[in-house]
Amino acid sequence: MRNAVVLCLLALSRPAWAQAASPALPTDATLTKLIADSLAARPEVAQAKAVAHANQERVSQAGALPDPMLQVGIQNDGFRSIEIGRMGTSFVSFMASQTFPWPGKLGLREDVAKLAASQNLKAVARVQLSTEADVRRAYLDLILVRDRLVLLDQLEVIWRRSRGVAQSRYATGGPQSDVLRAQLELNRIAQRRFALQAREQSRVQALNRLRVRPLADPIDTSGTHVQDLATLLPLERFFSSQRAIARSPELAAARLATTRAASALSLAGKSYYPDLTVSAGIMYRGQLPPMWLATVAGPLPLFAGSKQNRAVAESEAWLGAAKNEVSAIEQQLLLRSAERRVAFSSLRQSVDLYQQALLVQSAAISESTLTQYAVGKLSFASVLEANASYIADQEAYLESIAAAQRLLIAEVEVSLAASPMPLEAASSSGMTTARDGQSEASPSSM
Image (cartoon, rainbow, N blue to C red; front, top):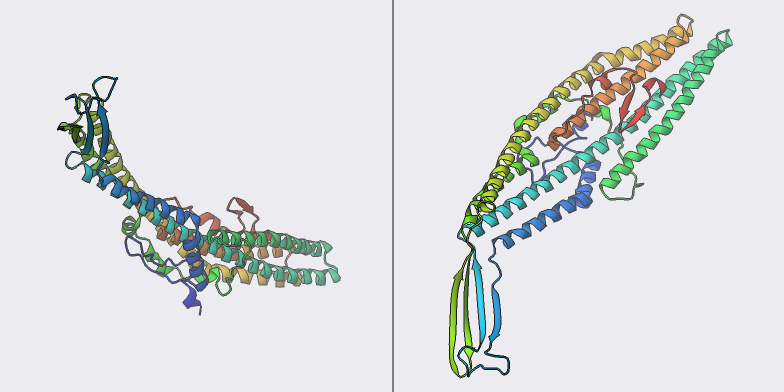
């Protein structure tokens, strides 16, 4: 049963819009529904799609001819009477004109608009990837805090046993301070439970916010635990720099920006050539024969030094910037994927060590210490230390697994953000950990 759910929590099923194949992991039913609800209802996703749609609507506008102009006028000799039909230079005119951009300009403008719309589609892909990742991180945090509550129950059992032994020794002349210290630790456990329960509620609220549901809606995670995710070796295949380069929405958008800048440069080069305006009209002169007029007009680039030349220089600069952005994102993707792979490998080894040695040894020491204290061979301080170390190792084990899963989330999300190196916090028993800006007491004070 455990092997069936080992990979279930942080699976990222390949979305339909993914740019390159990625290893597909299964998800449990709850997580699958949470992701689907979030993608369907999250306003950030709808906003990104609306922006992409708006930019798509610009494409046909960019490729359309300027609107034609219709002009109606009258020309008359003198101010005393209408002279149309009597004077040859008095008439009613009907004029129509149409501007025709220089050949190639319309196509380049449409290309630039199309590339801008394609860039916005990559923004939609980024929002969808990040939405899935946000749901998975929140889901992981919810499971982790609920497992910590279970761990707290285990710690309470240990301290109740310790208090019982201390009371037995006190009844036979042992120090009362041991009983009082055991009771103090039990009160601290109650205090810690309040904090964990509040954190559990905040994680539920975060997930419900991501799927636009009432914040208090319950989320059932029964049957899924952090320790079920401890088989990490097969998941190392997720870390691939080349796959990250192929799937990154930011890199795809940057490459489109380079192509767009090249088209914009070509368009700027055509700005030296005038857009021609063709006009035609007829002048009605009443009883006299009508007249007609046809013209072709276009601007002269007399100020090219301060306009067209500068437009070309601007476009060249934007093209250079776009090319450098592509290079920078590629380098960052290679670095982030390599960083995550190194951190994941270290965490996997740490998890293996916890499973094979540390947890077994820590449990044995805790049991042995309490037994020896019961017969007067050790002080109660040794019991305190052993209990604290045992629970600290249990919590660090869960933290190591969770940290590894967060790295997997970031890798499949193709995140450009630096992933924190969780090795010190995950491997040091009894050390203070800080998550989400809140300091947590060491497990000894759970």
